[in-house]
Structures are given as structure tokens and as C-alpha cells.
Image 1 (cartoon, rainbow over the protein chains, first blue to last red):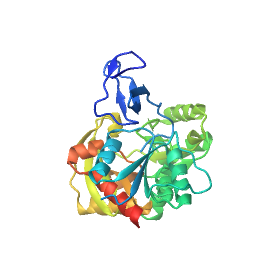
Image 2: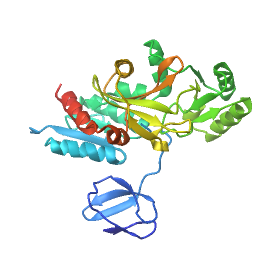
Image 3: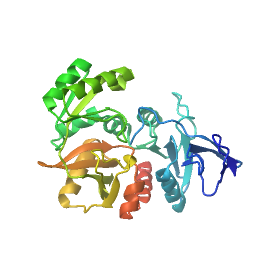
Length: 53
Length: 283
């Protein structure tokens, strides 16, 4: 478990992999897994102009 | 089973698609080297340890292209190849190539200044669609219904200030049913197809379009394979519309998402991609 950097809600690490992007269950902020052990998250990178498929 | 074979997975972020790829690699006993596109550096000399193949899943066209060029320089094959990323990641280049190969595609006019862009829209006629040449998910696309709207959109694009928005890619608005088609191609094989349905004019899954499996008719498969081959082949999602004059290809995506498609069809797309990458790495 760790805390959402935006709203301090508890964020679980179950089934998460390094680099995974997921929404905070409380505030919806997109978070990115920064480290798996110990579990750490940071706000996900902002979408840039050249992003796409 | 890996026999020392290493798959490099080059990513910006890890989405359900990349998780599925990691799971497929693990199921095949492959060693995976994670390569974060915001972390890696590329020197001119070949590093001593390199993966056997790099699966390029960067969502940034710029990063994907330069990484593919660097790995090619080191002699490491990438999926997709740099030429494919360069071509299919740019709508202007893609349209030119599709036209060169006689593949039906919407009428398109490219302009390089705001003044010429207005003339390009007039040449296409109303309604017209303006799209950024690079980037997708339906962002910064505009449907223009008249000259006033065209002037305003072109002015706004100019105000964005980046070189990407100084290229004006203008396309006819194709009167289609409330759906388009996405066909997923891996190597020379069509692995799945879906309808993307939306009451809005943009049918990108990223914009909330719903999905259902589409039959892979011989006509659809042949056209999708021709389009994929035209940009150099590999792992590609070909987007098509059902226009009054038949199927037209409007995009060929070199770093395609497939969560929605896999969910709608049950196809093991991640497994197909990993198997294809292994094949490329062992050539």
C-alpha cells in the first residue's frame, strides 16, 4: 500500500507492475507505478502532442 | 524455452496492452528487458548487452521513431521497423503511400500554411475534417462545416505554435454508418476485426466508442493486408470506413492499442504480437 500523491487515499499494489498507469480509486488521478517493492506511485505523465497509436 | 532469448519492451506507460504482452512473454518463458522511453539513452557505439528484439510500444511518435533508429543502428530488430514507425506514424506520409499503392482512401489535401489550408478546405468541400499529421486518439481533430468554422479552426491551430500544427491535413468527411472498422494485422495475418460504433463522428475507442466483433470478409482482409504491406508490414491496426464508394482506409496505426478489440473478439492479440516479435528476433 502507498498513498495517492494527490489525495492521500490508500492505493493498493495487488497485481500492479512497474510503469503501470491506473486511476486513484478515490480521486481518479492517473497514477504510475514508480516502484514495486517498496510500492511507490507518482502522477502519470501528461499526454503529449505526439502521443497516439 | 527462452534459451537466453531476450525481448526488450520499450514503453512510455504500461497499459492493459503492455500488461497482456508481459503476461504472454512470461507464459512463453521469455526474459523481458523493460525499457522506459523516458529513461534510456542511446550512444553511437553498440552497447555490450542488448535484447534480441525490441517491441516498440512507446506512445510517443517521436520517441518511438528515434528509439527504432537507434536499435537498428545497433543491429537489433524492432517491431515495428523504423521505416514503418516513420511512415505509419505520420498521416501525410501514410496517405501518400496509400495513394501510391492504389489503396482506396478518403480524398486528402495537405497544406503548409494557414492561407493554403483555407484553400485546401475549399478544395475538399464541406464538411471537411482537419487532423494533426502526428498523434491520435482523436485529439485535436475538427469537423468544419463552413468557411467561418474553417477560418477559426485554422487560426486556433496556428496559435498552438508547434511545427506539427503548421502542417494542415485536410480530408473529406466520409458519410459512413455510425461505425468504422478496425482490423488488426500481425505479420501477414489478420488476427481480429471490430466495428467501432459511436453516435459522434469520431469513432476512436479512446473517445468511448463501443465495440463489437466484425466478420473478416475476404474483401476486408485483402484490403487491410494491402494497407499494412504498403507501410512496410508488422504489427498494425488498419482503420477503415464504409463509404458510399466502398471501403476506404483512413489510418494505419503502428503502435496500436488492442484491449477493446481483444475484449470484443476474444483473440489472443498479445500472444500473436509476442510470437511475431520472437520470429523477427530470430531471423
